[in-house]
Image (cartoon, rainbow, N blue to C red):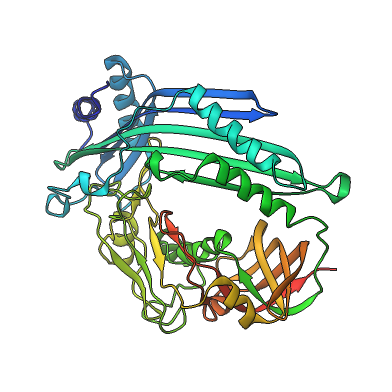
Length: 447
């Protein structure tokens, strides 16, 4: 097994030798296997493994990043020389720089995050069996005419980060996934839907039979879909797509957008952005969740915090650079790959659940649209104007009356977010724990 700590320390050494004032290095070692099945037989299998390294060097306030998949000493020396040459020609960035040593994460408890499944890795034969069972379960649902795809995958990834400010740390994460896409109908009347599950620990994963069955049942329910009426109606975003709506809020409070002024929430700090009673909590310390981590991409300690409290926006999502631009402190949200500087990114979030089930939310809505799938988007990040393609079910009298497709929903995100009414059906094993959401003030363009 590759010693990632040694690789990062070597990169820092050659960076200093090449003339860097400061540097940080990241090494990622991963192996993954994925299998697709069609008609009970193996259609595609893929395995990838290897080590990638990335180096960021700073000369004063100038920086440059380079990456490679060759970890030989000569290659790393060439990386460092190239990065230093690039940095000398780069424009000055007054906000670039490493964290102060006093800010760095120390003595974290990686075991508390429970990010590693210690059971034996799944081989291609076991993954093929899982996918084939999911496909068979979908085909057993009356009305399913075929399965578009059934796939399973396993991954094991290690990350190590080190910097000349004294930080050095790493962690490992495993994951197993299973998905199925079923099809019903023929020709222009063909409809499809899907279901999938992904977990850090394989023991938590839904059974292949459940994955296939749910995919099949969702698909058959879409048979005979038509366009909904055009007009202004309330909308319920089903739990499986509701996280996308909160994702637009997270994008709007991202430090990169805020620093550019390219967000409809640029003046909203300390102001209501959600209805009173709703809070949005970020928690990168949740156990057995793939988005959890003990430190961010700049070595700062992670901790739970409120993004929104009782409807009021509490803070931005910041890394060191965007925090300095805004005259604030980093919120330990730096995300880092091998080939680019850190960027701010939100991790696990949880929205306050409501008291009602999805069915009770539909009853409250009366007449409107239940969205279960979304495609495309036309969103103005500066104004919040929103338009997306959608499909789902038409609701009358609080009940599903027919499937619908080929429609567009439009509104303004600032206004939409202030009308949210949550259900109580959020999944607690995913990174965005967001229940079904009732939203007012949308225009539906259908038939």
